[in-house]
Image 1 (tube, rainbow, N blue to C red):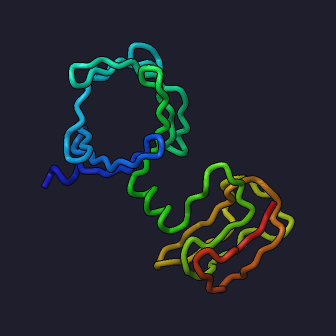
Image 2: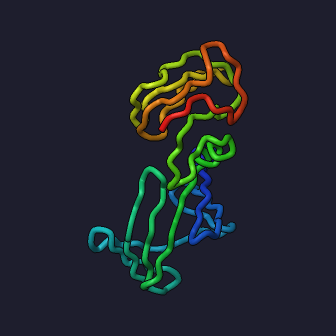
Length: 173
């Protein structure tokens, strides 16, 4: 029973190839086998890794914490890594994630629901993360926030409106 408490699953993309990784306590399990390695950080961002009686040099090249993406160089070969936990996968399945590198110019309903509050109007200056709409869905209040800075051009909904998944609620630029 205690074992399940420490059980977590991740999807890890390495150079576009997907791996399901299960963490049991602090030990990663990949394709049913424990991944054993000794890792020593000998300088900030530089590591020595020993696995299966082989030694590797690894270096953290870049890291984007908000996106859980990083690039590591192992013995002069770069690996682009993207880690997704169960919440990232769920948000993607619900259409609530944004494609990297694209600037959104609207806010869409992530699921069917009812508009409880409209917090902006045309002409409002908004900053990334500002609350724009409060949507009730699945008996929960969801605050929909601005994905980037801009100016509200048009609000397509009013308090009490029922909305469908992916319906555009607010346009901005």
